[in-house]
Image 1 (spheres, rainbow, N blue to C red):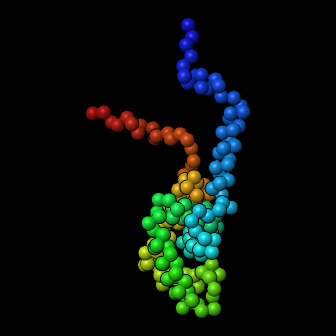
Image 2: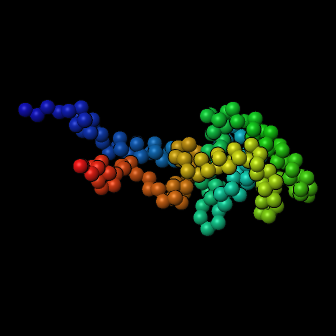
Length: 181
C-alpha cells in the first residue's frame, strides 16, 4: 500500500505557476538590492562622497570594483541596522575628511570631484583615522558579502575571488574518511 510522505505531497502540490512565483520573488529581491535602490540611512550627497572613497579602496581597474559591487548600499544598510553605533564615526569622519580636502585642495568642492592623484593624497593623509579604517572594512565586507545585504551586486566580489555561488557544497574526495590505522 502506497503511503504518501509529507515531502511527496509537498512536491506534488508544487506547480509551474508556484515555481514561476518563486522565480519572480527572487528576481524582485535582486532588483531591490540593485544600485538604483533608495538609501535607507545615508543622504544622497554623503553617499556620493563615501562611494568615492570606497571606489578608491577597491578601484575598477580592469575588473569590477566597489562602485560596480554597490558597496555603498551595503554601507548604508550597515549604518541602518547592525552598525548603528558607528553612525557618529561616519558623521565626524566625513566632516574631518571634508575639512582636510578643502585644506589640501581649496579649489575643490567634493571628495567625489577630486582627481585620482588628489584623492589618493587626501586618503593617505587620513588613512590612520577610525573613519577611514571603518570605510575600508565596510567596503571589503560589502564587496564580498551576500548580495542580499546590499553589496556584491551581480556577485562581482565572489567572481573576483573565484567563489562559485552554489546551493550545494561537495567536500573534497576523502575529506571525511581519514586514514585508519
